[in-house]
Length: 420
Image (cartoon, rainbow, N blue to C red):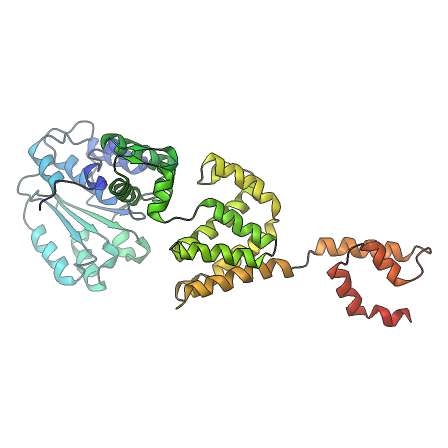
């Protein structure tokens, strides 16, 4: 059965520079280069996945070969624009270096580069994930980048620019593409939902945008799955059930139980989550992000730095007052130190249970030195009072309820022996 359905990332892919969101530095520079006829022979687009590297490359190829360009933009109506959009233009080649990474593949590019463009004014080679090329392939590519013909333009795209030899990088104009902001992704998701006649609440839009982690393509993919699951209406409760995501309240409960040294409740809660099939890696990442949000609020009081809804931001402000920065930093460091062990553990459930217990133990065993100093000062002051003629009365006066700290001091200094 043939399907005419296109995933949202393809159907709503920008076709002009003006439609590209967030990457204004790159779009403005490329448009001005086209208008002023100051075109380089090689460009390097760097950035995380789903930030528009290939999209920008195709728009640039269209604008350069368009028969009716306007202010550096392609018309998207001429034969050249239509063929590039459809992926069938004879002068625009796209190569995936992840699967075509050898010297023979680059030599094929060298052979094709010798011939003038068939239809367009320029011949484009768009090499995706270029950092995957072998050293021999890079050396072969270097030769053609050094002395390219006037009609030839290379666009190299990568998520790992540090793996590209400096000899290649220095011969390219470099553009660093940034992750999309949550608000920008929400606007695009809302636009797509409207086009597809889907009703979706604001909480669902926010959750999908957050899960996209700065990659618009990933967020659109999640939206497509949610549409397939929910139909014409997407609600946050159904979305969380479908994606099997822990509710934010769960993380608030986890840190509360850590603060209260409540091992029983924290293990019961974690066991309930596992019985519901929650992903352990998602839980680990969510807990790390939760602690990060607490410490951000503690140190900046700036709720806008949190990628959360207004209600959740307000909850973080109240919750952060229960902890000191030192307590949260200790818990975060423990998570960071355990990350690789957790990732490669044969039994992640048991590992996570022991980690949660260790987090409880970590904060319960730490001595608050400020409090200790104050108590010792008070202790010294009371011992100078003649009305108190024995050490038991002094200790009783300082600590109406037994204080483990004072009891430890008593044990260490053998107070009973000195009294005699």
